Image: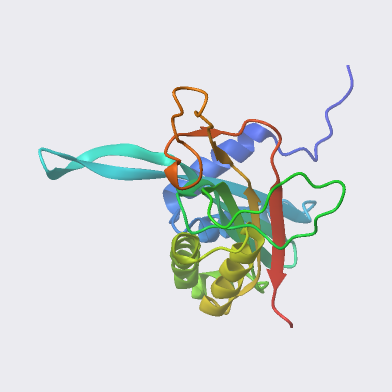
Length: 250
């Protein structure tokens, strides 16, 4: 039997450490807890040079019974999650990013796509009014923190940054008279950078979720295209994935 190297920190220890530190420390905002957890591992074990922590936070919403919010009952508020990643160095430096994932959105108008390159490979027709839908994945990166105390001193920025980024995303998606997914994405990034000076860059990944009108004219001349369109079918074929990262000039 081969000997087990004594440098291994078991996943059992990692699990137990996470549970114990969650009991002894605040778990909200998750950026702080990720920093606490990562710092523990690089300070406790001399041979560990970096610790990587990934946290996924689900949305649970208190629901009402007979019109009154129930004191201990909650419902899962969709598939959207909040995500946090921490990279903690043995020097104490902490790199943090936050984000949202699987935020499914749709608006029935206020979206267009035209003026793009059209050549012999293009079959997509231009449109000035279409359904716009996507599952939003967004990540924002914070300026590096010198140590855990620096993270603690900035703790209010994390929850505010998350709420601000989420609100900007939803508001811009709804109100922007979108010339393209790319154009709307760029506006979201700029607004998030302007709202939080600790954020250095913002990334979005927006998969197209197309819905196309169905031509029903074959059935008694039923009109369901153009201005008469009311019934749409989701597009299941391969669709585009629009990604971009927008960073500060410095």
